[in-house]
Structure formats: structure tokens, C-alpha cells
Image (tube, rainbow, N blue to C red):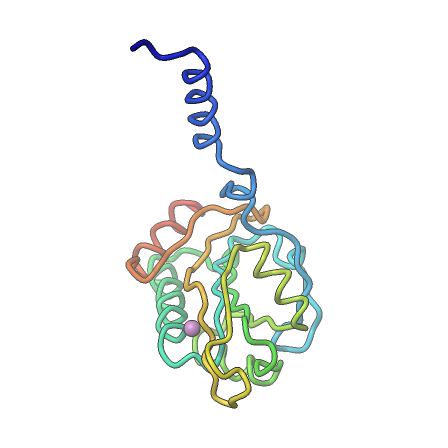
Length: 190
Ligand code: NI
């Protein structure tokens, strides 16, 4: 039995839709403006980091395992770049908390100092953190019993590489090494 034309048209339309995807899943749309408070207590926005390549990790200081591992990896990538004589003045590592209730300026300051001298930690109001996690497509949710002092936060664990213009370039997950990150940044900076 021959295919009816409307079925072909519908199939073509569906194929087109799935090929394009909804605009909010466009990788180019990851990122955007933010205003937060640095670990030095200064109000900062994305404009303060314009011109730099940014390695951004979203997490929280009370995270027992994943965050410290990924931030150590990010720091190691910077050390690899420094070993290769790559100037780090155009690379800005950022840690943005997903747990602003506990991650005060002081808490974040102590935390980033454990990793890399260039690392800037950012916190803010819950609304500011919600806005930045939405913009960067970062999932986070308090685990069971959010009233407990030692609650966990489930969150995306990705190191994002953003360009000097703030545009999204790439991401790195647990399966990527510090060398992978260093290579990607090195390639960009040249
Ligand atoms: Ni974590």
C-alpha cells in the first residue's frame, strides 16, 4: 500500500523538528549574564571576566567527594598549562556554589584557597544562584531532609569552558582528565 502524501509530509516535519530541536537545547545558549558575590566579598558580574577563558564549576563546599575531585582536577589542568609555559592571565577558574544557604563568602573563601590561587569563588542570594544555574543549565536539588545541617545537594558535575566573549565552548565530565582540559584550553589560547 503506497504511503499517503500527508504521512510523508508529517514524517518530514517531525524529522525537521528533531533535527533542529527546541531552541532552549541549543548549546550556544549555555551561559549568560550573572551578578554574584566573590569570595572577597565584592559584587561581580560576567563582565568582570570578559576577555578571559573561563573554567567554571558549579558545586558546594560541603560536597563530600565529587566537587573536591573535580576542582582539584581543574586546578591540576592549570598547573599543567603553567608547566607548558602557557600564560594563565587569560584563564579564569571559577567555582559557583549551588548551596548559597551554607556557602557564605567566608566559607567559599576558605574553600577556594584549598585549590588554586587564581580560583574565584562565587556565591549570592538563592535567587541569584537560581538565575545563574538556569543560564548555565546546571541541575541542583537538595537531597532528602533539607532541614538537616549536613544535607547533601545533588547537582550536575561539569567543568564548563567558556570563551572570552562569554560563549560556551566545551564541557568536561568525570571521564575527562586534567590533561584533556589543559589541552582544550591550550589549543584555544595557542
Ligand atoms: Ni558536589
